[in-house]
Amino acid sequence: MSASAPIPPDGRVTERSSWRRGRAVAGGVLLLMGVVLLPLSLAATWARAELTETDSYVASVAPLAGNTAVQDAVVDDVTDGVMAHVRLDGLLDAVPRAERPALRRHFTRGLREFVAARVRQVVTGRGFPAMWNGVHRAAHRTLDGSLTTSGRSPVTLDLTPVVERVRRQLSHNGLGLDLVRRVPRAGVEIVLLKAPDVPRIRAVYRVVHTAALLLPPAAVLCLAGGLLLARHRRRALICTGLGCAAAAALLAVALALVRGRALDALPAVISRPAAGAYADALAGSLLTGVWLLAGAGALTAVLAAAGPPTARALLARRLARAAAGP
Image (cartoon, rainbow, N blue to C red; front, side, top):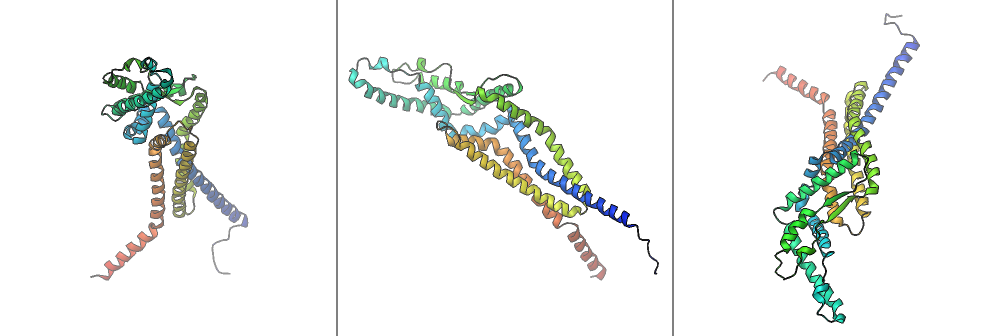
């Protein structure tokens, strides 16, 4: 019998192979958990920032001041608020009773066009972006207070600054009509969150707040632990990169589906183009992060696949050329 290393008992071989197998399984589970938690942590962090950071929210919606669909929606809402307080009864006293309905419709249509034109001048004016940011800052502060307290106050977008500017526009209407006193002094409000919905949104906020604190470190720890336990780290890194890219792409698809269903569920009185612009503005930073994650995952997989073996082959080739001489 030739001299050779002693053969360990079968029990030791089985124990070592079982430990390696368990290590590989644990590493794979941790990597899978990290791949799933990474896009979820990104979404939770985004939601927490939009719900609690007023400056971040205002920065997201600020470009909407120049969006045509949003401007049209604001013009319609403010015009409706103004026209609801306009009364033409005194102007039709000298008109025969039988002719009043038709004349009232004619006057109302013409007056609405006139008011809408004045409102559009305000909405498309140079001072509108500042008013837009101001009303959204106030609305977000109300939202922040509703989420962090036990109250049930609704969250509204108060367009009073726009209405006050319209009042000044109408004070020089040139029609000889007293329209200024007919404009509502209380302004026009767009309800963003109804009072009965506040407790449900508060519960969602608490879950998001906790998830934003716990998920990012959990995802990093899972990925790091999985790579440390993996027997073939290069292969594990390739799979992890591809998994992160796929998870990010799935999150992007889910966001698109949620956006479509949410817009389909809106009441008919809400402008769908304006709501879509809002949704795109709010989710813009999240989608940017999602596609950055997808790109980073794909790049990681490519670099890992073309990594050390290729580098070693290139180095060996250069050394061989150097040894061969000129």
